[in-house]
Length: 140
Image 1 (cartoon, helix red, strand yellow):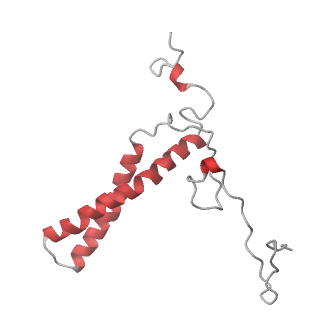
Image 2: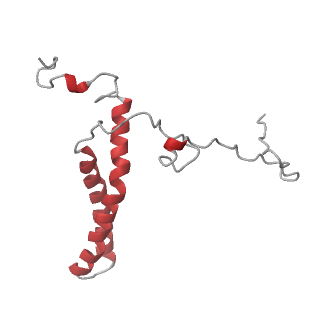
């Protein structure tokens, strides 16, 4: 049986019989701006991620995702509405720019999260800069 959490200073609703949602603790002051959803804990503010590189993969993924979505929209719109190419340019170019700008950060976060999950590029606790990638050994 699930026990209901009752807020302090207020009594539970007598007739509803429903539990109130749990009260979650606030994020630490240093991390309060990182997570807008209070149910997901903010990442540790002590971990520096500026040295973790995602290189060009997020940009390639944005091009593939946005290109497929917008091309599908363009083709469906073109079959339903017969408009001039200038109208299509006026519609789809701003949408492409907006979609690319809105998706680059989540996709980059996903790539860095994937690197973290596989313990790649500095997430394994060792200094990757001290190893020469050409020879695989320490830099002499």
